[in-house]
Image (spheres, rainbow, N blue to C red):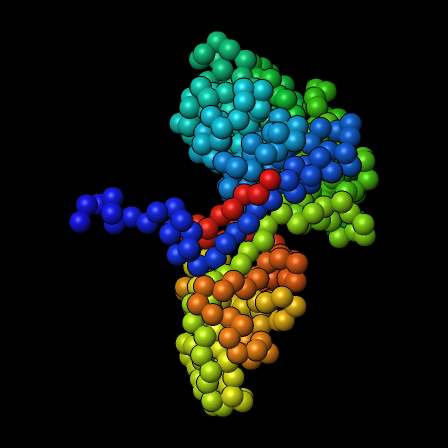
Length: 375
Ligand SMILES: *Cc1c(COP(=O)(O)O)cnc(C)c1O
């Protein structure tokens, strides 16, 4: 048999997938514009790191561009290089993690802008500017309270006393990152804002980018010139009433087997669930390899219409067993779809069941689903 015959057609591939991940480009554009309106006249960037929070940067970033976004943040240089050809020339890409030594040339050649997080990165970038006899653009990050990335207090002191370290560099924005931006009554936000104000005052006047998603919904003193929303664009709204954010992703899983079992039947690895009565069990083709975390064993659920279908037994790598006793016999058959994320169970609900945050659920979804981008 020829090799081409050993591949699935696109339709077969979709039917064979364990589930369907549906991503609304319309909701993505709506969320971008809602955030842009919220913070206007501050400009809104879009954070599209980690493959746009798992939803597919090749589709998602152009949707944000269409909605008016021109500033795109990724974490790695590799992510920026992949996106560069997919966006028009007036889009700017920034690399949050900064540059590893010896990657500066490639970054500059691609006209990608690094975030300089230390004096070492700053010096490496300046060396390249001098070598090439040009001025190179960059963002400069200062740490205002996360101890994660950015110039420390001591490094900022040093820079303020040696401003020639900025020669040959065009710092587009001074940036910093909020540790508790999503909390609206946490005094640490004010503390970070004050630290930011003090840092800005020590350097020549430059535009500032401070707010993440949460920061966009804080007081406008957090907004400055450019904001960097991420998760809010992907449908996770702030913890505030009447916010304008719409869900973006829905996930459904295919049923691969249904069986009736008597009372006392162990279900799944480790026999952690034993049926307390005669039950109907459906197996779906999604497991922890698809980002449906094992911590959902005997805890999470799926939905069919309004009916909640509890997960019984352990989550396996490629499958999950559901208690579907409440559905009439024959409702679910081979190939039926049940809801994992949708109108009855939000991303936030799933994250809560997993004791984690929606970011981790989204970025773990993986690449085995049929992906449908709807407009
Ligand atoms: C990830 C990230 C963001 C976006 O954060 P959200 O909470 O998703 O809005 C913004 N800035 C930096 C530096 C980040 O690492």
